[in-house]
Every structure is written in C-alpha cells, then in structure tokens.
Length: 363
Ligand SMILES: C[S@@+](CC[C@H](N)C(=O)[O-])C[C@H]1O[C@@H](n2cnc3c(N)ncnc32)[C@H](O)[C@@H]1O
Image 1 (cartoon, protein in one colour):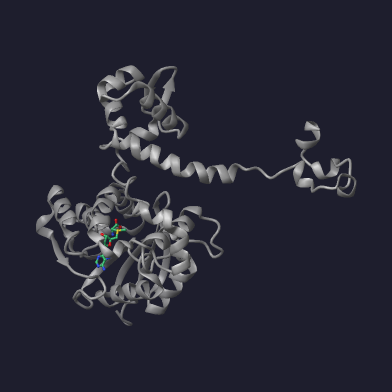
Image 2 (spheres, rainbow, N blue to C red):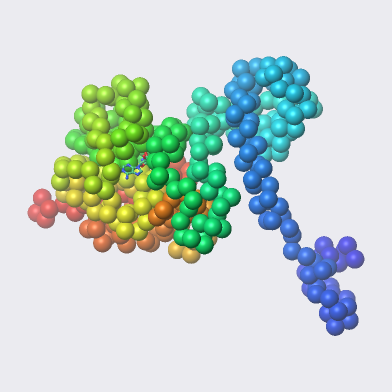
C-alpha cells in the first residue's frame, strides 16, 4: 500500500475503482496538510522571533560568542528550560546555529537581527505587521470593510518605529539606485521626498551629490526621525523639513528635479495614490524624474506572494490600503503625464518605477 501511495503517478497504479471501495480516492492519497500547519505555526514563528529580540538573544550572542544554554541563562537571568525551548525554536526558524548545547549567531542573524547589523530588521519585526490586535479580528475587518484599529487613528505610534526600522534597508536601496539613476552626476538635484519617514532617499542622494538639496515632508510628529537622521549624516544645512499631510501640504510647482514617493502609495487607495502621483508631477520641472517605490503585484496577483500578503496587511490595518499591480501603477503614471517608465530593482525585493515628466518641446 505504501509503495502505491508514494508512486509518482498513483492514479495509474490504482488497483480498484471507487465503486469497489466505496470511498473517495483522497482517503488513500490525501493532499498534504503542510500549508495548514504552515499557517498555524506562522503565528508561533512570529512571536518566537519577537520574544528572542525582546529578550536580547541576538545582541547577547554577538557579545558572548558561541554559548551554552546555561551560560546564556546566567547572562540573561532566564530559566534554563524556558530559554532552551525558545532557542531551539529560533534554530528551527533558521535564525541561530546550534551544535549540541551550544548556540551561536548564523549569517542571517548577524545581518538582520543584531541591532547594529548591516541590514538590521531588529526594530522592524515587532511593528511590521501593524497593530497585532487587528489580526485576531481580521474576519470582522473583511465583514465590515474596515479594521478595528486603523493605523490612521494614531499614525505616529505606528510610523515612528516603522520608519526607524526600515531606514537601513531603504537607504541601502536608495544608495544602490544611483547605479541606475545616476543622481550623483546631476548638475542640479533639488529633491522632494513626500511621506519621507527617516528620509532615506534624500540622505542617500545628498551624500553622493554635493550640490543637491532636499525638501522632506512627513507628519509633524514623525518628522523628527528625518531631522535626527539629517543631523546624524551631517546634512542638516541642505535639508528643509516641511510638516503636513502629503495630500494638502503646500508644494511649489515645477521646482524639483527628483520627486520621491517611497512606500506611501499603498496606504492611500487608488484615488490617494493617483493624487500623490499628480502632486509629484506638478512639483517636477520638465524633464524631472519621479521615483515611486512600493511592493507591486503582478497582473494576476500570484507571482509575488510578498506583495500579495502585504496587500492583506494593508487591508488588516489601514482604512484605504491595498497593494496594486505594475499595470495599474504604470497606467496611473501615464495618465498623470509621465513618460519613459522604467522599473528598477536596486536591491532584492525593492522595486521602483522611474518616470520622466516630459521636457518642454524644443528644449
Ligand atoms: C511606509 S513609511 C515610508 C517611509 C519612507 N518614505 C521610506 O520609503 O522608507 C510611510 C510614511 O508616510 C508617512 N505618512 C503617512 N500618512 C501621511 C500623510 N497623510 N502625510 C504625510 N506623511 C504621511 C508616515 O508617517 C511614514 O513616514
């Protein structure tokens, strides 16, 4: 029977018809339950990582080097059995090394989970899914068409830790984008960054182009993150901060060479995204370029699970947010008047549209 169940073409090896046995073939060759278990375990996997970060496991191992569970228990003042259960679970997540009773950071943990890792996500993990309470109420959100605790009710509480947590990755993306956009070679680069968070694009551009200046916008309560980063990178003199709602804040027409809409369209719904694109178009000089980064779905919403799941995250925690397809965004960009659309991926999984406002004819 086992031989038959594991055969590559079990239906060809069927030794009976359903009429003989009187029950469905799926009793003999059931579909795997792995996707169901993956979903069930997903909740635990997430909170295992949140707890490991909360308990400083990764930073401690960075300091101590390879350590036994007893040494870590002493170091962290945690009970051995509970700590071992957590460490073993993190090993199953492939985020720690383990040899018998000794645990150590692996390369992924060194890069993403220690707080000063080169692409650290330590601050991002607890906040990235949005308010956790919204997930246990997801069915209600779908029924009612709105979440219980939309992030718009208290945007600063959500966005300040989020943009602090995403800065390293977005700054790396913006830095690498120079290879495609060559902003470092622009004779004049006046940058407009709406909903800038920590201002990763303005900072990357100003670091590589000594003539560039930037106008950085975000909500009043969130803007201090950009100010602090500007100071940290010694760019305060070349960055103007302008607080306000990006849909209504005053922006000078035809005054910027580069406009950045970095991961701000997907919370705004179709109309809001189109409005932001239109604002960027008006703000750019003829020949100026828009950089619009987000998580884009393919036409059939199935080839990029990360973007599809990000759409569910937006639905779970925002009043208007969803993810959209490449086709939808390129249509909106063309409708706004942009041309010469390109899609670039400066670092893995970070895609950006680059679109040009037509130069005035004859120039
Ligand atoms: C996902 S973060 C993206 C931050 C940054 N642009 C980046 O790419 O890393 C969204 C940003 O938009 C800001 N934001 C949200 N709603 C806003 C609004 N109505 N007006 C201005 N900024 C807003 C948030 O405070 C947050 O900094």
